[in-house]
Image (tube, rainbow, N blue to C red; front, top):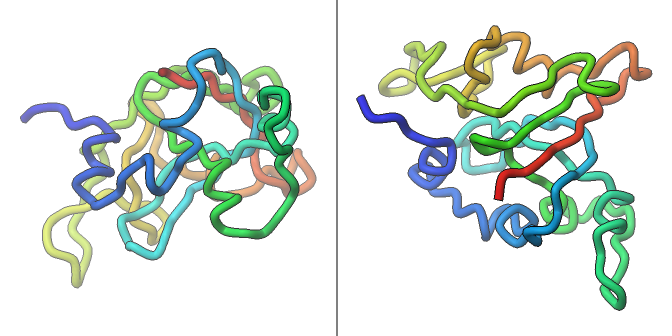
Length: 168
């Protein structure tokens, strides 16, 4: 069976990265580090959770060129999506202070943990009752999912902090 990348999987689900997440494909090639929080993003299309980093406003503003408008804190959906970076194979991710929780190269396995779900044709990947798109190869699916879905008590019940080194 040929290996399917997360980009190919998202495309078959009807996701077009440049439309949903303008930040990722439009990321300038000189940007080599983004800071933010982990987020299991799910939209209304029902395609499942997409493991992502929600870039901090300060991180976005640091990489703006002179004359570009600064990003403000907002609850506007489009403004938030513009800061969302879905993880793709080859990205490097540090979770927690200096990678204390996890540190490695993103390699999403789109086959592990597939199971049949009543009312859904075929087998899908899911965890904690939610459909997902891939688990990190070599990690327990529950460990991977908890980093994105469950706030860390050591960070005052806030989402896990992360540094993303995006592949271009």
